[in-house]
Amino acid sequence: MAGREADAPAPRPRPRPDHDEARTLTPPQRHHAAGLMRVNHAGEVAAQALYHGQSLLARDPVVRAHLRSAAAEERDHLDWCTERLHELGEGPSRLQPFWYGASFTMGAFAAAAGDKWSLGFVEETEKQVVQHLQGHLTRLPAADTGSRAILEQMRVDEERHGAEARAAGGTDLPFPVRMAMRAVARVMTRTAYWF
Image 1: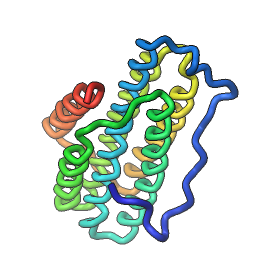
Image 2: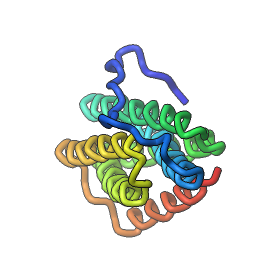
Image 3: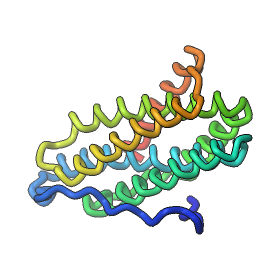
């Protein structure tokens, strides 16, 4: 996965709770929290790839700058999830190269359709990610305040990315495209939890 570009903003500090009780998690709770964070990590690998593919083919320099700015925040999310996985004693999905390659291709196809469709793709992606994060926040063990702090900040950022894409000229995607996106996301989330 690509590192930060030379002109990218400095990474933001990871959100942390006042008191992280992760050490009190039972082994099954720790494994479950790690599975959820592995899914989120895979999602952030995919987000990097989507934004890279979209920015590569964006026609308008303003749209390209928007995509690169969002990618920088997604890189923060990726770093936070990586660190948290290590704290939970587990690693990221072994399918990372696949998530990146497939997502880069989808991003490039979205951008090839035109900037308004590409921005609509961002908006729909972020809408689905927010729903996914809300689900994970309800499924995390209550004592896992460290993972919860990360996911809550990610949710705020993703909501903003979607709103910004809409404000920048994004258009609604056709229903079949939205449903196909949901199906692909389901495959990724179910697979990345375990692998």
